[in-house]
Length: 253
Image (cartoon, rainbow, N blue to C red; front, side):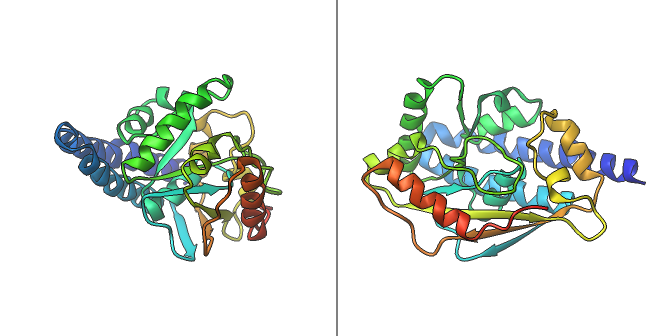
């Protein structure tokens, strides 16, 4: 039964839903030749549609507390899973900064690139300069942007300290930084969220996704901060953002 459920969900997501949205993206792509701003607005709508469709099919129930910030905005959140992008995208339709290898993934890589996702090579510290320029441009174009300043996924017992390098564009341009806390819980009788939601072990993406889709999904609760934070020092601002995110965090079991 789990085998059938897993493959049914997988085929609907990647055999039906994603190709349809991919086609829609191709249809609206010519708008970029006339107006990048208009293309980005259409992209936000498309991303939210994809995220909400994925959540529905995969059994991810998203509960939001507080009002999601509206673009243009800069948002930081804790990082537990690839589902984090789905949860934030579900609510905001914003652009993300993602690890470099995602752009080479089958199907998802092309979709990510076409949706203006920014890729960073975390092994090369010099790449931060390039990425920060793209972040500044994204905000200038009126988009929302989200980063996960823990810089990698952890097991979910706590929120790890935030790295401050990608917060620099917000400080340099005096942009307020919004924050959100993401928590996951699995239904009674299902494996704990640390096993089927958190993607912190060295495991291929599709292998982990297959295992997640074979279960009953999860509940993702996202707490949006009431007021954004400002700062003139990126390290000090990163510490305050970390404290604010950690305040609402419920450790995964």
